Amino acid sequence: MSRTRRFLDGVALTYVNQVFVMLVGLWLTPFLLHRLGQHDFGLWLIGLKALSYLSLLDIGVLALLPREVAYAKGRMAIGEPSSVVRSLIEETTFVVFTQLPVLIVASVIAWQMMPRENTQFRNSAGILLAVFAIQFPLKIAYAALEGLQELGYLGTLQLIGWVAGLMVNVGLVAMGHGLYGLAFGWGVTQAVLSLGAIWKLYRSYSEFAPFRLRAISWKKYKGIIGSGLWVSLSQVAQLLRTSDFLLIGKILGAPAVVPYSCSGKLVAIGQNQPLAIMQSAQPALSELRVAAERKHVAQVVGSLTQAMLLLSGLATIVILAVNHAFVVRWVGATQYLGFTLTLLLLLDMLCRHWNVTTIYSLFAFGRQRHLSTVAVIDGALTAALSCGLIMVMGPIGAPLGSLLTVIIVSLPWNLRVLAKELDCSFADLMKPIVPWALRFIPLLLLLGLLGTKLLPANYLFVAIGSVVVTALYVGSQWKVFRNSRLYGYVRQQLTFLERPVKEPDLVTK
Image (cartoon, rainbow, N blue to C red):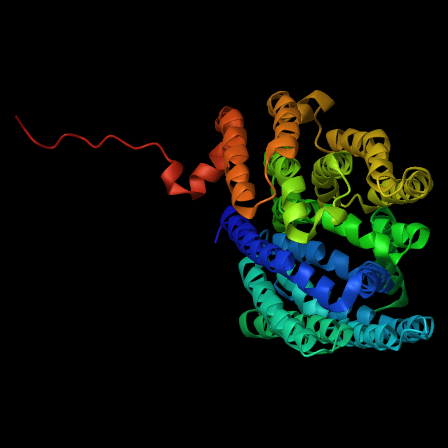
């Protein structure tokens, strides 16, 4: 199976999964808000965000594994034995198991720090921490399959995991178990993902699957940890940058998180959609680093950037037009924080999506040190700006602080380094973007304002408005897509886009 086909399969399954999560999430939020109350639901949102900080204890080793497996697979294509992949996975397994005691101790400390006045929240958090520690080493199989580009299988597995977790969530919450139901549902999802990945790795890639802990030298151990630390720094910065729930909860109180979350729900959904492109492409980019010329890689990166912005632009323009009507109908007017907040959230999302293409591309070239440096500055500046702006302006300060940081610091810095890595100019990187932007910006402002002012708060009108805005956006960008290299890549895989070939006339007159 070609890299392009694996990529498209992974993107397709990811989108199926995200559509499911979107539909379920839209129904689940008012369900939980009604049964848990605004305070407990706000605590749950904050707790899930805080849990992500424990993931930093892997020192970035698991985040590096997909890329390293893809590198090793690329070396196999030029004659190296398949044992290089198994050795890599076994060595990573050894490193992860040495980190497990630290994770367990940190989980116990985190649980002891939970507020004792809310027993249910404290015990539910304990369940989350226990599951997190147990499945931590089991993530190795999932990361290895990402590097082997088993993206279609992983997408299916995610869908199954979400369905299983949802059934437990809804059932236990409906029975009155509150936060315990959410904790057990989350645990079921994690179990399906980990065990399903292990089964696939040993069934389909037995030649790569680890069968023992491969002890490594101290020098090599330090090398792995050292490389992972740069990734871990990037993860710290990412958590700082996405600490809006924590900052709003701390400054304005837990109940204030709920309207902010509801106002940005569609934005959060749209934020995930284009990311599937780069997540699915990253293993292939890592392999191309070994197997292709820089000129070809630059063309691939340009096409990926254009695909990212085309999809991100679609999400931005549709959400801006329908968000007011949707939130008012979904959870009530009191949970909607206004057009300006929505616009800032979307502009930040759009710029971050553009920046993501540079991050994944630079990561494939092994530039994690640069990425970590930029990410730490970005995260610290975003957190500081957002904190100050929230105190002055309220929730609107969170997306404004993030937006100012990405357009001033992260994006221009990463683009300059990417141009150098690809041996091209800054203007070359901008070529696929300018035609899209010239059509997108005026249409965004026009349709966003019209939709916010005129669209009734009704699901039917929201659906109709989404279709109309999508059609107008696609019509405005179709020529951009047809004239791009991206169209050529897609047409090779989707036969209905190919031009018909005239058959010879075999009938003699």
